[in-house]
Length: 116
Image 1 (cartoon, one colour):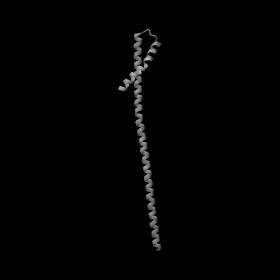
Image 2: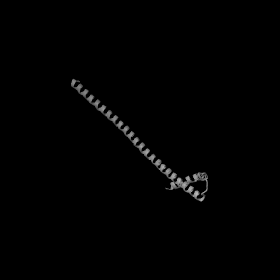
Image 3: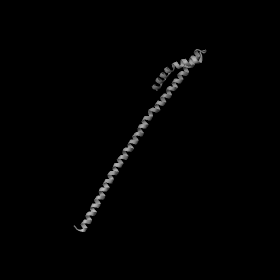
Image 4: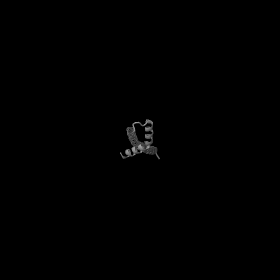
């Protein structure tokens, strides 16, 4: 083999090595892009899930507020009705009777707010 042939073979092998290195580098980049894509998809999914899970909590707050408003209105109405029906009734007695009725008011308020 002549010196020219050896040089050409060396150049070809170097070119082939560079080509193989380039192919390996591109495979690594593709893997990296795939990993980044999966991470981004997971991030988007977790944000979406968090937003989805937050919505019922806001609904729960609105429902609880409705129940509280309804219950307070019922207590107020019943207290005024007791006072007007029995003007001489002791305020402590009114309070005791209203407290005894409070679970009933809560149930009624829950039913009213569930229907909304």
